[in-house]
Length: 232
Image 1 (cartoon, rainbow, N blue to C red):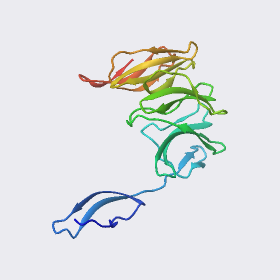
Image 2 (cartoon, one colour):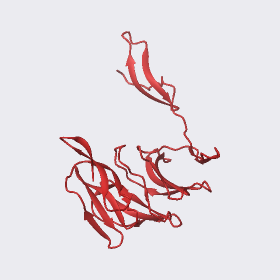
Image 3 (cartoon, helix red, strand yellow):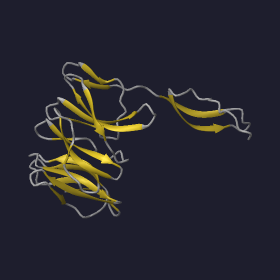
Image 4 (cartoon, rainbow, N blue to C red):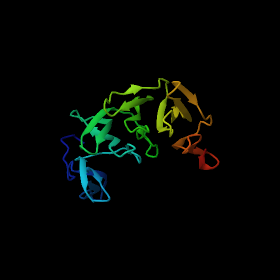
């Protein structure tokens, strides 16, 4: 009641602590504590069993957090780090599996939904990939080359973009664009530099996937009557 210095009773910052509860006489305190373990980013070769360490510690984001280049040379991924000031930073990284070099490409903004597939989408040549970069409620598609990782913005529309997917011929990029609570599938045409709205149902969507011939896109859609369904 009179204030004073707080005393730490938990095991410290090496643990994630939560849920304190007092007993009836106030002499005992029960809480949950989970040890925080540094998790390395490893690449395991199935045939030989050989392993390479790309990072000593990684904090991935969401269910779908990394994507391989077509030939397996590169790994693009998002992770959360903490800067010197203690602020969290979510950024895009590119790892070379052969040399184990990992480069930070730039800060990225991810939707706070684990089910959204927000990993970079690779072009068929394996030398370029599509990432979604930006701040707050407005993000854009960007083309990034592995030899020159300065992002080249492709789109300029004011929406929150998610789930980039590249067509088999590398000419179209499908993505979900959110305007407020409305989500629809859009296409970006790399040949004509056009942004084209493909659906008008406005409900939440996930898991964009082109058919092998590139003429159709499958996705998961949520609606009030059927909850979630597969659409094409």
